[in-house]
Amino acid sequence: MVKLWAVIFPLSLSACGGGDGVSFAPATAARHCGVHVGAERLAGLVMSVHDGDTITVAEESIRLASIDAPELDQAYGQQSRAQLAAMVLGQTVTVTYAGKDRYNRVVGTVFTLDCRNTNLRQVASGAAWYYEAYRCEIDSHQRTALATAQASAKAAALGLWATPAVAPWFYRNGVDPQVPETCPNGDAASD
Image 1 (cartoon, helix red, strand yellow):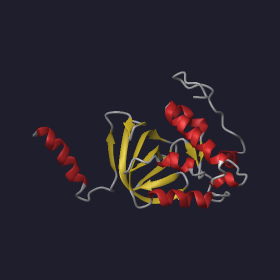
Image 2: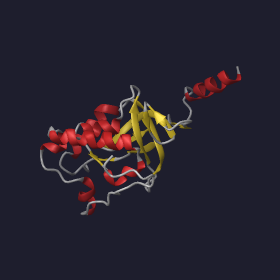
Image 3: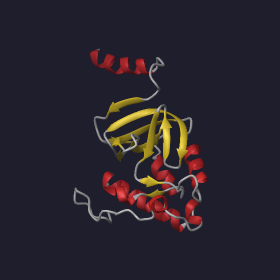
């Protein structure tokens, strides 16, 4: 009975309307929807979409991990934002993450209730790049999935691949980021 109460009580509190609609909970395992992910969880309603890789879940700013979408004033920036909004705006999502960035945004993988990986879908549709400079922050299966999705979108000339596009990291800084050849766990660059 105590175990049942430990499950029912937190659920009843979340339904009371207190707080900002975001629930933070440490995960017991670093898997969600069959994907190896950060151990922390946050669930809530997507209140806004800033651009093609940043959303707001209740009051929390979320930066989609391992992808980089065009800036809003870049070619395909508005379309990338619209693509992400069509996928998640007004929906309840689960964000899995390991930490925050220097702007205090949660950096994570966003899953819809039907377990669709929003980060991967942005890349697969040609609405964002796989941001390889941060490849060591995800497991080899996700790296392979993102790289494969990007190659397929590029080959099919989907989204930003339909016309020559400047990567957002180059647009912002004028240089390409350093992509690690190996990760601390010994994984090679080409998984």
